[in-house]
Image 1 (cartoon, rainbow, N blue to C red):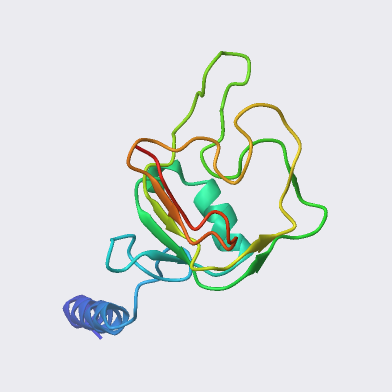
Image 2 (cartoon, helix red, strand yellow; image 1 turned 135 degrees about the vertical axis):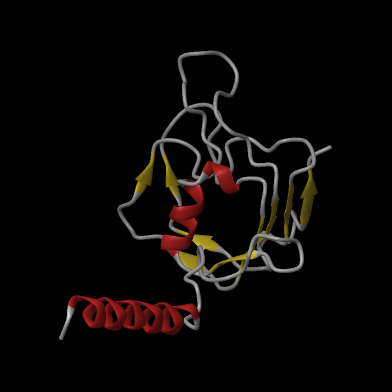
Length: 146
């Protein structure tokens, strides 16, 4: 096979590989969704919740719990899970507040243990306009920060 023929075969193979991968679905974040209001990110596992916690760039997006989540026993957080205070020495909340929409969809998050001071909880700080709804408890069905 000449160099020109080999080059043609390699280009054809690369083209076919690209076409095959083009048809595969893209692996999204979390357990699905796009983060848009009509297609929120789906939080279905403890890993999804931890991924959200570690991705402040997504704090302005839309999320929905799709099942009850049981965090691993023995896992202890030293700050809020989502939107933690990143510098407890300075006064006030330092860090990115959650400004999106979190729909608990009447599901629960179990075994959440936090040992810390100031700005602790599932959310450390909610920004104006943030919405947390259907958190799975009867007395707190919907909270909108205004």
